[in-house]
Image 1: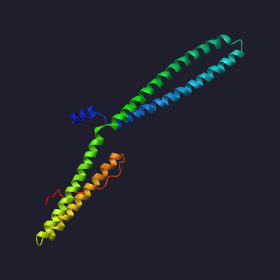
Image 2: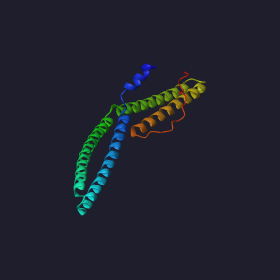
Image 3: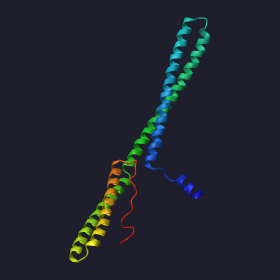
Length: 192
């Protein structure tokens, strides 16, 4: 049981999980950046207000100069932090663009196309089988019963194949059904 958990922890993330994690990181960085900008605006307004008030009061000029100098130092520090956040955000956007390109060029799309082609080939085979059974049934007297029984199974298998093809096509287009259709039994599982 512990080995399965270790494997789950070391399995690589899917492209969607990577994009989600990166988007969350960029979203968090945006929030921090906006908060820092608001804090910077507040500090600038406070420092300018203190500066104007200190100019009006000559008695407090020494204390005001010290507080203005402290606020200026704090302002410079916040400006540096803001620049660092902008740099990180720009790097994250570049990483996100690269990740989106990797997802777009992944082998998943090709695999989906192969599966769609396989389902179409399966449908062609079932149509050929149906035609052959029909021809054979007309050659052999009294074979109408087995033609109906196996014809229903072939129709059912063809319907399942078309549903799978539709789901693959929707998946390839990025349309994912939240509600999964009722699981139905494969008509050929019990054999002929």
